[in-house]
Image (cartoon, rainbow, N blue to C red; front, side):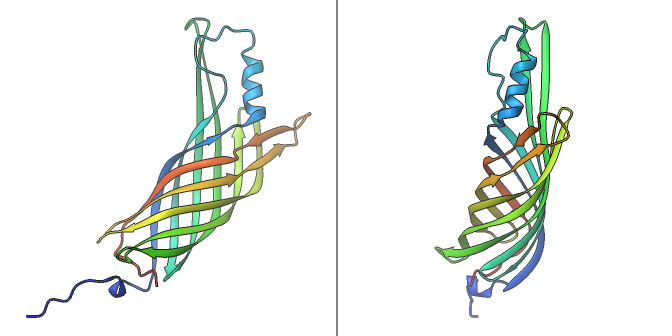
Amino acid sequence: MVLIPVTAQEARKSLLYPGFGIGFGFFYPGDVNDYITRELSGYTQEFGTYDMLMYLHAQAFLTYKIKSFDVTGLIEGAYAPKFISVDYSSTFKSYAFTRISPGVTGNYYLPIGSKRHALYFGGGVQYHFLYFENFSAGNIGFRAQAGLSLQFKRINLQPHAVFNYINADDESKRPSFNLNYTGGQIGINVSFHSPVAHR
């Protein structure tokens, strides 16, 4: 009996597969934070800061990968909550700054180690629908991303970092109100499939 080892070369050359991702991000939406500060100027802040600084995000995607490249269609949602206790707990205020972002990305893969795993680098374009209180706006934004593709027998894990440029103005208000989601995010994408060759 001859045992033949499983190698990266025996992985599929191409594959279409779905997946999902979760993570968190950092940003500083100036007009949003100024709005919160003005609205609460008559209160005594008990602790913390009025500023929104972090958000949670989740996405669903469909990827077509062929050797060293992939193309992904995705829809991503982000939610930045702010809960503020003022006047020694007699008043509780909450705010939410959200976005919905469909788009397309592409990546290039650089095999490492056993060649089953790889570093990847890429970017993409998304259209962002932005919402805060009674303000809303939409605009095209761009992203740059890098991560690590860890392929196991039936699961692919992709921890990654992303820089997003997301900026739009609600022109229906006077003066216009800026909705800015520009910043960095960290997350992990998960998909369930057999390995795909990087070369």
